Picture 1 (cartoon, one colour):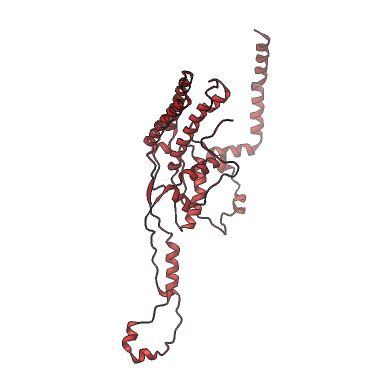
Picture 2 (cartoon, rainbow, N blue to C red; picture 1 turned 30 degrees about the horizontal axis):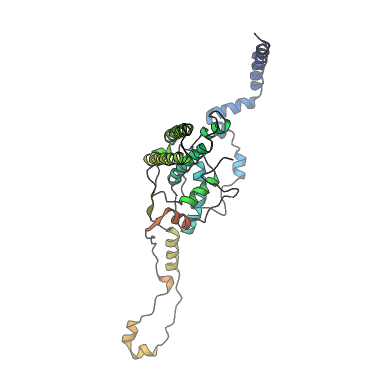
Length: 330
């Protein structure tokens, strides 16, 4: 047994929880009756409910003078698309107010598809730029850690929207693999690492850069097929049908029809007195306040994802740096 093992054994004994200290802990806990009351409440109702201060609840009202209508709650379920949901929620608020919609949701699966494609392309590009790196180098290990995982941030979201646009959720709904993306991304990452190994093997065998890039383009076709099978192909064109918010229009129409109308004295019209038929042909128009308006729906418009994104929200830009999908390693 060397000296290091002896020192480690001594330190491990010193770091262990001592039985005499445990007895001290339990005695101190039971001395204070407040600990017992807190334990009863937390065990029965849960830590958060037991820790709720009712005086604080009374002092903090939940009624606000300004209410923001955000629409229904969105759910990323068992996927790492939190950054997509958060970013799209900021955009749909603008669209709902601009088009006077009661509720609306963008398609998160649409961006999820193109995010997987762009991350796969970036990964293979980084593999081509690090062919001279050893497989156990820190740089190559960092590249291979997560080729096309779900995570992301605002710059990536802005780049996706500016390049591919947006579609409503009705045009590209959720799939089982977007709700629970573990199996899909595990298979995709395995194939990407397989492609990387083959690219490096071809490079060692003497393949030219043009040959490697042609092989990379072929691999991207396989990636597209994997994403299309798992998520479905994204639409190029779609019909968008939006129903404006009805309640406000109906209320305005009812108030307008219920408003008392001022009494108007008819002015004598010499022409009508002389010609009664002319008066019947041109009756007195009804006041605008007495006309009931019924809510109407927008007609479906054939549009594309990029055009829809331009009409739904202003052009996005990254605040700190520009996100280029074919990123290079410096």
